[in-house]
Amino acid sequence: MKPLTTGNIAIACGLAAAGAALIGTKTNRRGTAVETHIDTARTFNHSSALLALSVLADSAMEHYRGCFDNPAMYTPLVASALSLLAGLHGGRDHEPHAVRNSVYVGAALAGIAGTGFHLYNITKRPGRWSWHNLFYAAPIGAPMALLLSGALGAVAERLRDQPAHEPRLLGMPAGRALALLTSAGLVGTLGEVALLHFRGSFQNPVMYAPIVIPPVATALLVHTALARPRPRWFTRFWLRMTTALGVVGVAFHARGVARNQGGWRNWSQNLFNGPPLPAPPSFSALALAGLAAQRLRETER
Image (tube, rainbow, N blue to C red; front, side, top):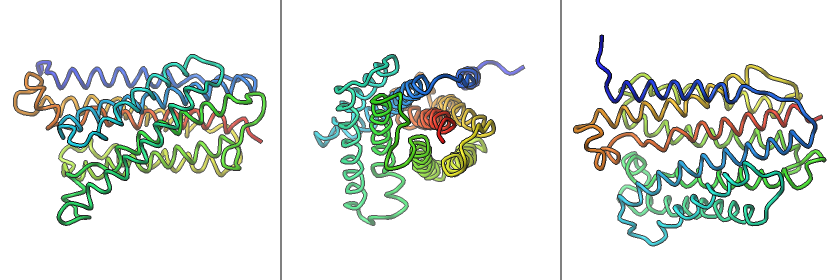
């Protein structure tokens, strides 16, 4: 019998949390249009908050490692912290809130600006668009997570404006638009993960999981958006599996940190050198948003 190690404990905790995530997303209540729209809005608030938490933890670590060389590096910390608070508040609220909406818009703008800064960071280096710079320069996908956090939160406020009416976004039924938006977010997250796991040479076969599962979820969400509205149990199941993927990913990343020299006793160094703990929950956040978008889509005509 193998002794319990930090890595084994982390995986066990991750699997237990994943089971809880699956149970937590199992409920598919049927209610009035108002209840559906409000519940969907609150789920988007939760999804926005989870993305903001991921951005806050990741940017705090990476920008600290960069010694906050540019004062603008404090911006994502402030924007993501405010977006996190707005998401937690909105997840318990039934009414639209002007301050929350302003916070979300600010977070989205900070994400756009951050993407520009990160692109500039890559292009100013020798070699510009080289594999080395894509691997080790400022990650392009990180600020986009903040943009998505703001966008999902702003959508939640929009759904609360007139909950008795069927909402529309970008000229489309809201459920269709949100399914497409979530699909785009999954594609962007997938690209970032594929790049970093390729850098890690896929040394653990489990590293293929986030390359295989989210693309299927993306395709199913696009089909949900474009096809006739109806309940789709397999899409819900796959989105729940994607939610679990994000949670289990944290456990495997924790195991990766523990495998570095000194393990968790040397956490101040290994948290920076090991796989990033805040990254996998992005999949969970977007999968939860996808579940909410599908539920809304099922009520549309």
